[in-house]
Length: 79
Image (cartoon, rainbow, N blue to C red; front, side, top):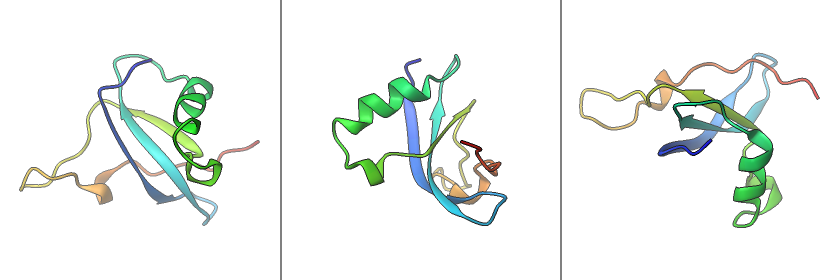
C-alpha cells in the first residue's frame, strides 16, 4: 500500500531490545516485503526498518511537530 507520510526511528519492543521501526500513515494494509524491497534500494541493509507499523495518523505535540514519544508501543516480533 502506498503511504503518504512515514516516520522512522529507534523504538524499544516488549522484550527490551531496540529496533528500527517505520510508522506509516496508510488507508490500507502495509506490505512489509514490498516496503523492504523499496527502501533496500536506497539504504544499507542494517538501516532498513525491522518493523512496519500502520497508523491512522502521526501524533503531534502542541507545537505541531511529531511527538515520537506518543507513537504506539511495539510487541516483539517472532521470526
